[in-house]
Length: 343
Image (cartoon, rainbow, N blue to C red):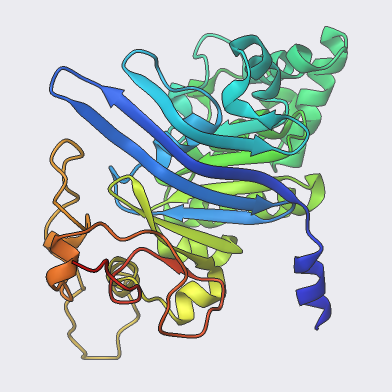
């Protein structure tokens, strides 16, 4: 066994989500936004959760933090186990407030919706520090300035006095990262952290997150629809579709040997460099994600799948290791690799 494999084996499990189901109860019916989702994250790793909009990625993240609005939403099943805290679904709201921002932090897609526009950014970071640590206001502000420096903001003492609207989009996202990491959480959830940024700033933010992961020792759940970002950042990947995980694997395995038709479609959709004079059409997956109130019978991807056959339209497959090939840690939800039920 190589040193890399040995190190991987010896990593401690930080987060274990088992059969998580989060539903929204509406006048039209029950929306199964997250349906029996399981995922595991080890200390020091990055887990990428990918899929199109509406697949349940963000609801999974909000469920981990117990931020589902009730009504209409509710966690109706499953366990969310955080090392040292037990099952988070059993904790009270007061107990979860002590965990949010301290042991688990989240970076949202658009920082302007998360930053208070009438409070200086340094004061906002200092408030997060004061909430979880027994320090003076002055000491909290000093720590906030240090965090701004850590995330690469120049003249942090001056920028700490700025209001959010005075900062660029990239700088606001750096402020959000500083706020999320100010208490050195065990877990950082990043929900589409680079979507609203240009390509150059995206690369800087991703590089920053990787650097801080090494320095602070935080594990990351990275939610995105960008497979290229996952390839650069993640050690493990979960592919979600219509509220369920359809494939999960180590990142190198998923990119070198994907097996679910939806995963294959996502990877084929990545733009590639063309040769001079070459004309190629960008691959797309036909159709759209089905409405969660009107899911197709059987496999949820059956209406869009180019390899659909009879069992796919009759039974929904479980998430399990593929039966007809060597097991390399992959789990897949597809009748092409699992044995359908008998009549």
